[in-house]
Image 1: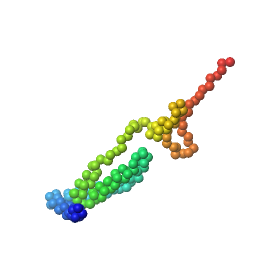
Image 2: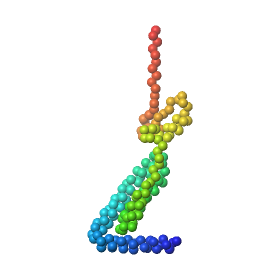
Image 3: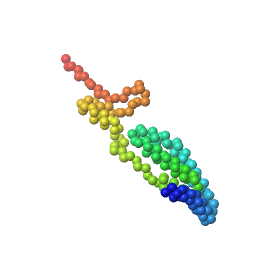
Image 4: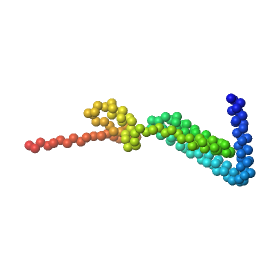
Length: 159
């Protein structure tokens, strides 16, 4: 099995060169333009992924998701970017295949206008007669208190 993998890894550059030479004979300098544009796109993909990686991780953690999925998605995009940087048609097809595989997004059981899961847990643990808090996030400023209140109006005696 190891010999087959080694032979495939050695045959890949030979096949890439053979395909590029045949394409160059057929299409001329357009192949060079193709290689430059695809290499530039691979570089842009890597740069964009470096910038977006921390944001995706934070979003995944804040939504209570699994950060491993965000890491695997970023790794997939980085590998595709490196494959696009390598000149050749076969590596470009492999990179396109990696980019076209959809990532499974977690299904949101609730719509965007409903409150968080934490609120449901809090309300389920609270007796029905007591008022419940509607927001589960803490304020960024500790001096701000966010709560609901009910104004009680006292009736005046007609005496």
